[in-house]
Image 1 (cartoon, rainbow over the protein chains, first blue to last red):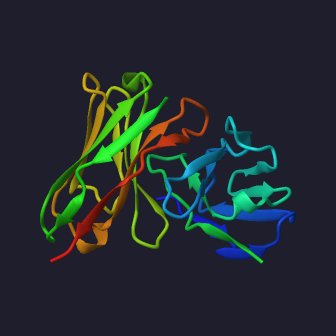
Image 2: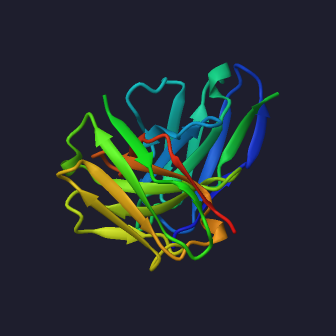
Length: 107
Length: 120
């Protein structure tokens, strides 16, 4: 099975900061990589699909990049509503593995 | 409005069974692929199972293979997860999620989740 590793596991940042989260696959997954945001007690929400496509309704401060094994989610200017946990997910093989998550906290 | 509403969760003893349901509305259910994803208390997301729009293609995570069965009834706009031989480690909130028909097969709509607790 394809393993997904996110880093860091958590980070502290201030409103207005640029935040970068990375996700590494254990083998090449082309661009079959999606990003989700989850707030406490809520279901996850889709942010980015196919590595860099912004889901409808998602603010443009969110962007994704990468291909193969290394991917990045960037928040260009962190807003108060962005404090949450972020997950990457691969959909290359028959499994749909998630990364372990990155919790973005207020500094 | 797209809605996914899970039901069927509850408390069950180890070795027991439960059947989860997911009622879909607001979209043409029969043309969408679907997934089950779970989240243990305080933990991350774990993909559980996938089913194609017709039900002809099914995948499972290794952790549930042979114990869980995904199915769907397109006439009833419903997705199911039959869970047998439940273990303590199956305790989680179970979400059903729709697959967006786009590159990457992302999950674009999720239900609110139903809690399954496996405990003696």
